Length: 155
Length: 170
Image (cartoon, rainbow over all chains, first blue to last red; front, side, top):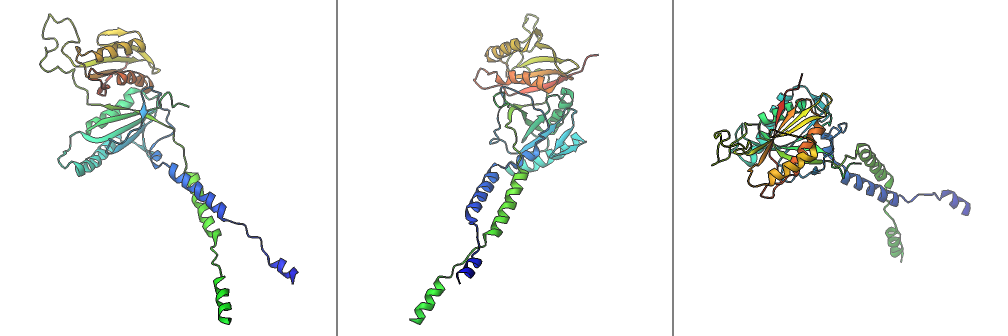
């Protein structure tokens, strides 16, 4: 009788602590995940500037993130935009529609409240960068944020 | 008595959750988050208001620039401080000018720009940066850094900048 009982006894590990630990890890990764980083081209080498301040997006209604590499190519969400002027004009139309929700009086050609975030490689010649800036200005963008690494934050 | 025994037996039955299935799902979620986790570098930004470049503007109720032969100060009557930065083919800085005077290096430029913008008598509230077309972005940012750290007479930092592209040399 006792021998048959010992055969039936199965070793069941207590999964509860493991599940607790896994849920804690999931919570950690859910909190630190940043979907905005998908808009960044992490291959770019940003310049180092002492006055670069931490990103403050509280005042900005909407952001238009533009990645410009050393060859002047515009990359958005990993896709290279060949016609820069056309892409920015399309984004400006979208920004105008969004701006009209808050300010119905805003017209085409007025200053847009959207902030253009330029992430350019430090080796980009100004003539290539200026094309992007001029295209933005021509479509009504006035607020710009130039991304850089702060000296204190540089690894 | 019999009834009581039967009731006690029923109350001892335990409902066991199958944790293995939940653990499988949790591990799948964990795998997803680990694979999609990309720690982004901590970036800063320089916020600017970039209006399209215009001719150097005239102060209200002030003498128009160039209208008087007695005015020998080239900066009087304008509210835009003009900085010129020329670039070499390799993208480095070839030369710097502040207004019409040449500046030997960025340190001197910083001192002069900060004193000019902080001086209420000059009336500057924006900077026009004339940039050589070959100048690299990191070198331009050094000049922008100097400008954005300068304070205006009202205590605010300068945020109005305009860029003008200069053609590259032969």
